[in-house]
Length: 251
Image (cartoon, rainbow, N blue to C red; front, side, top):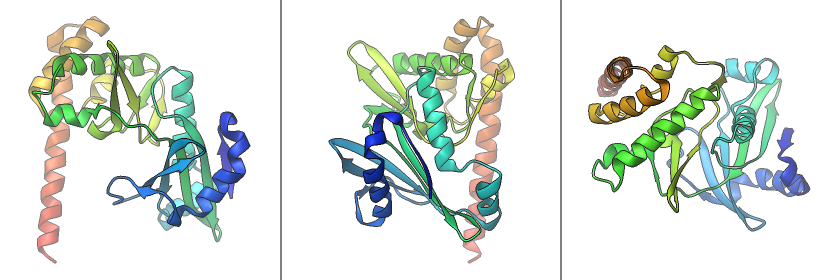
């Protein structure tokens, strides 16, 4: 077993190890668990979020064992980096990795569980939500700060940004962190990063208007590129869904 613990929780490392060993018998399943299993577990006065990554395919078993960092380790390390940059994400607590024969087996990422007031997905599905435009513009400023801090969140999608209301402020927190790059982003890469967020043109218009002010470019230029990438993503997404339906109909 390989693991690393947040120094603030180092005194609990043995108990955290026991928790992982008992994973099948503790906690409450959170979400649909279609790919990986996420559980919430009460622990030392905290509510933890434990994500159990499924055993990878044979090629990735070798890759993660000898050449690449696992999803659990990346999640922990990227959350730590985001915290250092002042970017919201649930507190990283630990990751655990287990071998399976000569290859890589299961892995776990533990973070603090947080309950948001809403997610970006809620904005997509509820256009009449109170302060909708205000929240959307604030989210755009948050994304701009990600880009300014040289963070490319490759899973920047509707369910992966948690939104919290704090007095007169709106805070954002990123989850599902295992796919990130840390590098300077040019204008094209920044617009591409918006492609998965919403199919709604009116939302893209608001985000492009706010981003244009921040990056000091004409709104038309920002909107055109942001919408082009969004439209292309939606086209490919729906084509993929149609292919899946056709395949299912054959069986």
